[in-house]
Image (cartoon, rainbow, N blue to C red; front, side, top):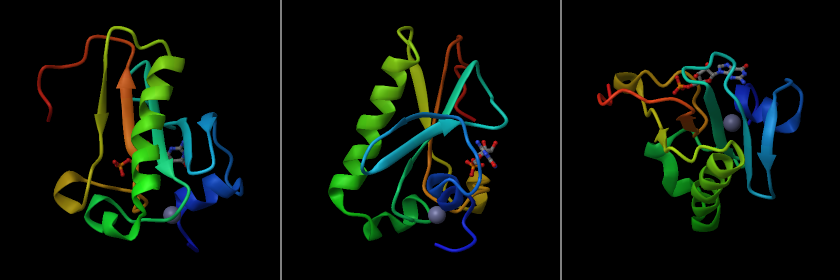
Length: 113
Ligand code: 5GP
Ligand code: ZN
């Protein structure tokens, strides 16, 4: 998808700190971390967000969740972690390419928002 920031990161036009990738997914460090570990997991196929997830095949969607788990293991988040996906304006989604935030490495707030 032209002019999509995360598509450009996936194709390498824009640099990123990759922590894991496979055929269907790409995981990289958030440029503005909100926790000691803050990684973004994205499908390599463009999809604007959770509300457009019907565009993605089931294998790619499942691969995203497996990558979240792999990243948590690789980052040593044995104490736990949180996965967040903001969708649309009310959730303040700022990049319209589906992404899962993986947050951990410290005690996170009880509050979700
Ligand atoms: P959202 O607000 O859409 O849920 O999350 C977008 C995330 O992308 C934000 O946490 C933001 O810090 C991150 N981000 C925005 N631009 C870049 C970038 O160029 N590189 C990286 N690694 N992260 C980015
Ligand atoms: Zn994209």
